[in-house]
Image (cartoon, rainbow, N blue to C red; front, side):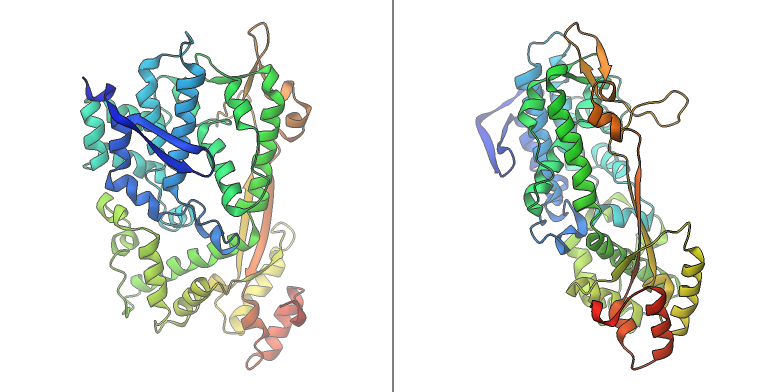
Length: 437
């Protein structure tokens, strides 16, 4: 029997709080889960710094990846099976792409990427195509199989239907992380009727479409996503923790460039600071390694690095206030000057952070970025773009919401053992009172 068709002697199951059980019968999937590159995802949190706001948010990229795989497996084996529009030859490719779609995420994911100008999708493809255990398993399926998996994840594969299962405005990735993140953060926003959505999904040539009768379940899903972004993903406390995390890495990089002598040399970061990390370097970094350095750097001679690390480790985060950069740029300039007078480097202690999300949109001719809309399948088989049928979705389509916060160290501004007058001026500008802490 060909390796691609080989089944396990007995089905393996993972007990899962979201999907109850995750089922594995394919030898290829089981072998991929066992690779060191996939096991590394156990050491990467799904929600980065969110655990400092929602204490239950300790779940990993590992269990999210299994969840996405399980949703795709159910769609293909239970919903699409036997339908003429679905080519079952694409089954294993879809399952592998679902399982491996987040393989390249680094520690604290997006914060880490921003500091070092990296893209986790580039590393996902590098792991799939490189000298790795994952690549060796995929090669056993076929010489071109790793390339196909990488193309699905990179959204360049010729079969757009396969891509849309994993990456679209209603895909397995979003359906898993919304429910999983809601479960672990303890909020109710991310819950929606996934069972109903799966039942009304249908394969078409270019994408998955939804039967018209399932429109209200999709409305619920889109509103769940909207609420999760503003109540969880963009929570100002979590964003504040990201600010400090980012500034720690910026400071360490700056010190390295200035030939600062670290007590605890950042050997794991050297190639990142130099701008040319290898795949091997990348895979060695996980959140346990990052946390180790932050723990040790609390003892560094550099006061900024040690202070920021203490703040992150002990959750002594910055305060924040609402900020409108269009109207308050003069105020920010004045604050910068005052912070310097107070002995606080504004590059590290006065930070504007912005959050922005587009809950749903559709492609408009002439625009550069194509957004594949959600289509409803009418009773006669015609397709209608979702917002043309749903008043709820029409109301939010194309409407980007943006939020700005200004972060600062309240404790240092309240410490009047030095620079008392300047700090009082800062507090007045920030409309920040002593009794607010």
